[in-house]
Every structure is written in structure tokens, then in C-alpha cells.
Image (tube, rainbow over all chains, first blue to last red; front, side):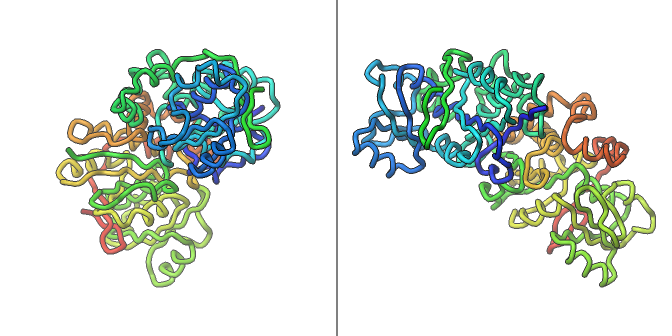
Length: 234
Length: 234
């Protein structure tokens, strides 16, 4: 039987074996929700980079560039970290360089996996439908917040476990706990995570609309996958 | 307002500031449950050590010595890691050197805190009653399993958050999530954690009696505290 597990933060990724696994990277607020939205609106390729400086270099080479730190856009870049910024028709066919506080780091650290996918509530069903067709074990890698555990990524991980658990064995306690938390929250996720640290952080920045959007389930039928260092639509 | 937070595994402890905090170390299965039981039955002092070799040296100097790795007693030591082994009358007044897979590491890594206490379900109320009298923020440090998240220590952390949350602010998502998990599990913890990795591991070793005992709440009114490198009863 295939196995499903959850890594609660990239800071613990060295304890997991990625070989022959599909890593699903999630940063609900908001990197992987933005990436999913961007692909659903015609972006052709996203180059995830860990450092702002690398992102700047790619911008100077003519790419669109998005950089976020501490939930704010870094000055001088084209796009911020709101999914609504990725719905514009003029993004069609473009390549985007992107760096965020947590999401791109989780992605970079996971690249030795057999396949690396981008997950969010927005494309949850597309991701889990795809995982069910594959012969590999799955590890959901939560981006967390600066190395620490967070609630929204755990919720998404729990949603994936919940969708797969008839076909996959739950490997360890982090996956069990994520599943329990999702079960408790699924009927009202917005209320459930109202006290979470990131929601408080985003609400202070008047980003409540982003929060609500990022928690919408199964809006986009896209599966972003990492190929030769860049994300593309499968 | 004082704050309460949870560190899900010692592997993440470098992300937390221990200064002016009380660290409550928990390794439900079974190190901190054994320590609590030992103090309740007359042990005078416990010297926690990280390595088996150090434990051996202390044994040769005449101390009682307990060493566990992978849930089993290490050959040549006096005591294993079952709470029932610490109920014997001949332990009264003795000093014990102890090393375990996870619990003693969590303890060693937390020693820069203002105070370091030993928590378990067995002395939960004693610990939370004491914390309420103190002016310090609290960090529950879960011992986990070889660096990974585990369910039983998270449950205990959630129980502490639950007891303190009227007087302490919940600092971050790990504490929120632990509280949610405890709320979901509290009326039947044994059933709730039946599928956890450690319960499966201990059940294979016929340690079901230990599991049930370690989940009993408020049995002992003892508060073990670290003083000059050794644990004593407060």
C-alpha cells in the first residue's frame, strides 16, 4: 500500500526520505495559492528562487518578478503575494520569477523528490486526483512560518490525507494529527483559523479578502509540477 | 498577560527563545511519566544524561541507572523505561542516572530556560497549578520521536494549554493546534491515540499496560524541577 505522510515545517525536512516520493508543497497563505491562481490564468512558467537578489537578476533579464517578505511586496518588484494579482490577462504566456518568505524555501528544499507538486485548497482535488493515479508515496511539505508549525498548511495537509486515506496508509503522527485537525475544521475553516498567527498577521494588513479566497476549495483544475528547476502546468 | 506556547519537537527548539520562560518537558511514553512516578515513590534525585556512556559511568560510581533506546532497556542497566519499575520501595532516597531516546535530549536542550519542569499526564494538575503561581511565560517542549512530531506529547501540551488559557495568551499555532487536538481527544485518549506510531510501537512490545497508565491524569502531586543539572522534587 502506498503511504502518505506530512512534514510540518521545512525545518524538519532532513528527517524525511524524499526518494521515490511525490512532495506536495503547500503555503496556503499565500505562495502556493498564488502559483495555482497564476497557472489557472495563463502563466506559462514560474521560476522559484530562494533569495531576493536572484529574483532581481531574473527581473533584469526580462522576466516578470514577484518578491514577498513578511507578507509584504518587496519594493521594485512587479507583483505581490496576493492571488488577485495573478488574475490579469496580460500574464498569459509569461514566465515569472518568484521568491516568498516560506513557500519557495520549502520548494527548494524538496527538489530531490521523485516529483514536486504545488498544492493549495484552490487545486486540492486536481492534486489528490493526480496522486491517486501515481505509484509513489506522498509527503505533504508544509511551508510553515519561518521554520515554525502553522495551522493553515496543516489544514491543507489534513485535507490531502483525508482524500487519500482509503488508498494510502497514514505513515506517522504528523499526518494523523493533520487529518484530525482538518476533520474538526472542515465545515468552517475561516472561523477555525481566525486565531491563527498568520490570519492575525494578514488581517492587520487588511488582507482578509486574500484569506477567504485562499481557503476556497477546488476552484482550479491545475497541477503545477517542478521540471528542470521551474514550475509548469502538467 | 503571560504567554503559553508549544515546541512540537526538540529539533525546532532553536527557533524559540527560552529566556525568562518556564520550559515544561514532556515525553508521555514514557520518560517523563517514569520520572514523575519515581519522585512520587521516593526517589530523591534524577540525573538526566544524553548518552548511554555517561549513564554507565554514573552507574559505576554507584548510582542507580536507567537506559532506554528504541523503547527497550539497554543491557546492563538497573531499570527500564516502564513507570511500574519505579514503584519499588527500595528506590526511596536513591539517586538515579537516566538516559532515554527522546526525553532526556529534550531536557538537555532546554536547560537555559528560567526553570525546567517535568510534565506528564500523571502530574498534570500539579504542574499547571504551579505554573499559575509563577510570573513567567511557559513553553511546553514535546520530546517527539527522533526529532519528529508525535501525538501523545502534543496531547499533553494541549492539556496544559487548555488548563492555562484563561490566564495565559496562546502565543502561536502549535499551541492552538495542540489545544484543538486535546479537546477532540480528552474524553477517550486511549482510543484516540490507538493508531499513533508510538502506541503501535509499544503494543508490539506488549506494553499496553504502560500506555494506559501513562494516560491517567492527576495521579501524583509532584513537580519535578531541574536544579544544578539534576531533577529534584519541588
